[in-house]
Length: 131
Image (cartoon, rainbow, N blue to C red; front, side, top):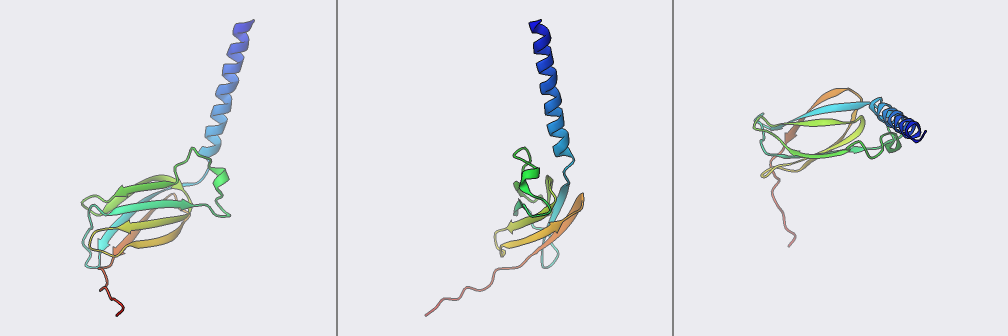
């Protein structure tokens, strides 16, 4: 009698976990590719890329829970490309830092399953001091 109770509990726990994961799998996710280039069109390798999902009314944070990663930090490859693992759709902040260039930051509204975003980095501006 106890063995059948344990089996029943294990079976119910399995169904509960499957239902939880399938509910999260239905939420819209997107895969991003970020191309980082200079104004002259040259790839910027080893640029730091920070991608952060921002919850909004259409895509609330409560839908995803803690099981979904909403922030990624990575570097571009030699071709200036950073591929981001699946992240929730909606408002996505992209920041790019590279030595010798101005910091880039912009919020994109992403509703597609996959999207390529081109980032053009500007050279630094001249420093001015108050005298």
